[in-house]
Image (tube, rainbow, N blue to C red; front, side, top):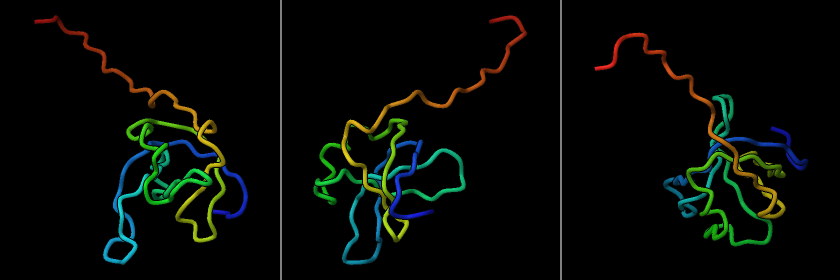
Amino acid sequence: MPSGQKIKFTGTIERQIVAQGSKSEHEAIVLRPDGVAHPTLIIRIQGENPFTYPSLQQFVGKRVSFEAVVAPSGTSATIEKLSDIAVINPPSKKLAKNNGPRP
């Protein structure tokens, strides 16, 4: 994943324990990108405390889209401002057709 440039992301915001077993272990707000090709990505809002995530809590469990700058490590991304996050509809699920009679 290229670092230092803005990249558009879409996925679901979750809480996850990161840096397990280290002095830096903590619960972080992460993005689970749509698809399976990308690992989770720790997300932060520029200028906010990177360990408390106060403004990102409202997005946990929601599918979102935003542009962010990826850190050189490739494990985190910084969003410029909260208003850059857009909540979007969950992926559509095809409903199975039921052609039989209803009980």
